[in-house]
Structure formats: C-alpha cells, structure tokens
Length: 502
Ligand SMILES: [Zn+2]
Image (cartoon, rainbow, N blue to C red; front, side, top):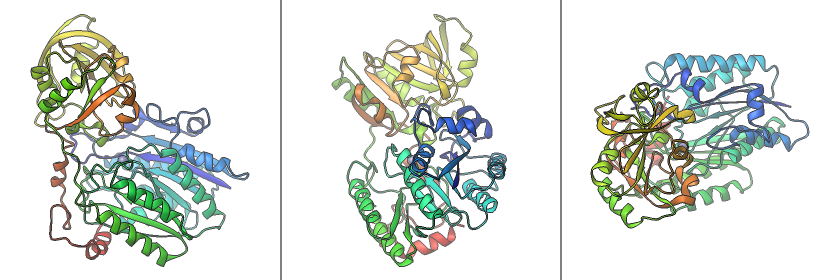
C-alpha cells in the first residue's frame, strides 16, 4: 500500500494590507520529496520553531504501525498567517500538487494537510476548494483522500465534498498536530483496506462568537471536546470534528460548523452531527474574555513584578498568529509614555528601518519614526530616540535590530515578529527573564513556551487588525449570532448556509 502526503497550509487574514505569494512559502517553509521525508522521520523537524512532529509525521507513524504501508512524500508548503493568497499563487499550488501526484506513480491514498481558513483575492476566494478539486481530479473518484484541518477551518461544500475523511485538531492552543495526522492516517489505512466505509455529514451554525475563550482545557469547551471523544467511542462513529471559525476570514458564510464521519451509517452521522451542533449552539452566549487597556495592563505589571520572570502583555490588536502584520505602535507608545521603571521588551515589524539600520554600527544613536509602514492608518508610525544595541537574524522574522529606548527595548524585524518563544528576545541580545514586561503577538500559543518564565499575563487591546470587532467587516450573507438576536435555533439556518456556501 502506498500513501502520498502533502501540506498546503496558511491561515488568511482577509483584511491584512498584504497578500501571500509563493515567495512567502518559499522563504518560510517549503520542503519537497526526500527533504520532507527526512523532516517527518524519527529524527526530523517537521515544523522548525513550532513543533518537531506535526501532521505528516503523524501519518508516517500510522504507516509504521503497519507492515505493508509505504509513504510517499510529495511536498509541504506552510506560511505564517497573513493576507490573502493571490490567484497566481493559488494556481501555482494547484499545479504543483497535480505534478507531484503525477510523479508519485500509483498510490492507494492521499493525506493532505490543509489549514481550512485560507482565503484568496479576486476570482479565487477559496483556494483550498481548487486544491482539493485538483487532487480529486488527479486521483480519480476511487482513491481515498484524508484531509487534516485546523479547528478554525471554514467548511464549504467544495471543501467537504472531495475528501473521504476530514480530521481536525481538538486542542486550542493547537498542540495535537501529530495526533491529528496519526488519527487521519489510521482512518485512511482502514479505508483503503475496505475495513470502513466513511460516510459523512456536516452542519453550518449561524454563530461567529461563543465558547468563552475557546480554550479546550477550560470550560465550556472542555466538556464539549470530552463529549466529542466519547462520541467517537460509540460503535460506528469514526470521527467527530468541531470548527470554531477564524474571525478574520471574509467568507460571507463565516461561522462555526461540525463534521461527523461514520462507518457507512448516514442516520448515525446525522444524529451525532445534530447532537454536537446542539452542544456548540448551547455555548453561543459565552463571550470571549474582556481585553484591558494598556494603562490597566501597566498597573497589573507593576503589581506582579518579579526577579525571576516577566509579565506577558498580549497585543490582541496585532496578533501575528491570527494574521496581523506585527507593526502596531499603539501599545509601544503607551509603554514609552507611562511604563517608566518597567523594563519592557517589544517586537515591531519595520522592513524600512532594517534596510536603513542593518549596516549601521552597533552603538549608533538612532532618531527616526518606526512601525506603521504597511498600514499607517491602522498603526500610526512612532517617533523614537535611542541607540542601536544589537543586530541579529531571527529565522522567519528575518533580520533584526535591537533599539534601546531607555526602559523600552524594541526588537525591529524585517518580517512579522512572531515571538512565540522567549528565545526570540535572547537571540535579539536581550534577557527576557530579567525584563518586567514582554509584549507577545500571539493569543494563546505563546503560553506553551513562556510558562516557565511568565509571572502573569494580560490581554491588552489598543486598536488594530485582530480586534474582534473586525468581524463586522465580513459581508455576511445570512443572519448570524450575535449580530442578529432573532436567531433562536440553528436548524432553520443550517441547510441554507451549507447550500449557499458554494
Ligand atoms: Zn487555529
């Protein structure tokens, strides 16, 4: 048995001033053939900077449990959340996939890792539909395709239709990439052997908010995710998925959805899907946690000062993990003006400043405006006066210069400064443990890496691309909760939403 595997993944922020092109994938993560095989092996590093083992390593592990399954690496393209995919990029991704499937020779199944919330510009708003269609056309109707997705995916009939199996993350923050690939791989192998006959259904819910902070370890989502695991233990149920929607997606059908696969039993699939949809609908009134002002966050940071760690301020208005640009100056401005006495480390994207300063000697006095280059309306440029103290290269964040502005140290980066790990500041010549405040550009995932040095945290709001009310820009085609409070039940809306989202 031969199973091919590939990844084409990016989560799109539809309102970003940027677009995402092949060059972004090439610069950040593009692995082909043997290189992908090596990255997904026992000693590999499938997603450097995030996790050594992700979905495709999970498939490899599923195959290793069998004596007769060979895996065929195609390619893996992954880019940070950012602006929409251009039509040329979308076409290039499809054609690469077709070519690689042709070159792979006869295969018995395909595992494709997608994000599920990729959006495109112009004539191609749903690039993942075209990618899946290309895979289905290349393989014909009978070769099973398993697709893994982020739980922030947006389902549409043309994403659901070509796949035999959909398997989504069940953790938020997402630390189950490997097990998602393993689960999908095992189901795919059983499908190819004819041991199961995947029969799926889905529901589209008229809700964009709900579930509180949507963290799977905390209520109310903890109970729902546990319930989903119990559902999967019922005879005949193969896979149960819940999608909590990516808020910065401009799909007119944006909303939560559920997807259920059973072993040849459409009635069971419908019953389980309805049951899970009811559970999700039941938490729609639980709002996200309140975000606080920079001033309140500064007060909290002063109260929590510690010699052995730092207070993390989540810049919720500029979360790179949700597709923002990383050039927000608003929080930096308040820290400069009102955060005296707190040593604060702040990342900021500004490619022009890098061009200007990267070849200047360390120690140089710097006086210029920084930030707000890509969208000065959203993030006004800020005048600073300081000294260049360090130069570095920070992986996918590109070249960086560290500026000392007194109590504030700013790490200016060429590309988006995705500081998931405290090592970001170490590499920029700073000591995050001795700092009082670290500004982070991630909603949840930074916690996985910061907990040993984190002495408190706050969700801080200024104004920017990842504010939750950006969702009001979505051109909704149907009524949705919480913007239309006349919706009592999801049922009358589901069918129309699913059919309409072609
Ligand atoms: Zn996600």
